[in-house]
Image (cartoon, one colour):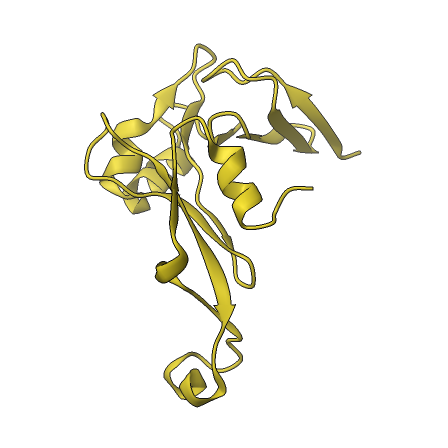
Length: 146
């Protein structure tokens, strides 16, 4: 049986950490307090963690956090094609912030420049920057909460 919970985040201590059990030995965590995510496969030395670290941007790797239980937490990237994206946009670990970008409909005259079936694109012109602990506000900006 699948089970969803709000638990205390191992990274930031927030009580807004969403845990989803997807099987007897597998669960995911997404903390709405800090915006970081992990799962039961993201433990030191695991092939899954190594594969994830290979494809993550360097900043995300630099910000990764190892919890006492051995799980590695990394910043989330949220991408909802018709709503927008939330991601970290910075050059350093000392001054990073979340960026939220709303999606807009692709004008008919531009559709030939996009993959077949694409209906929306990210409009960097409406990008808004949020402080490190304002991940939920970034999601709200895109209309993803509530």
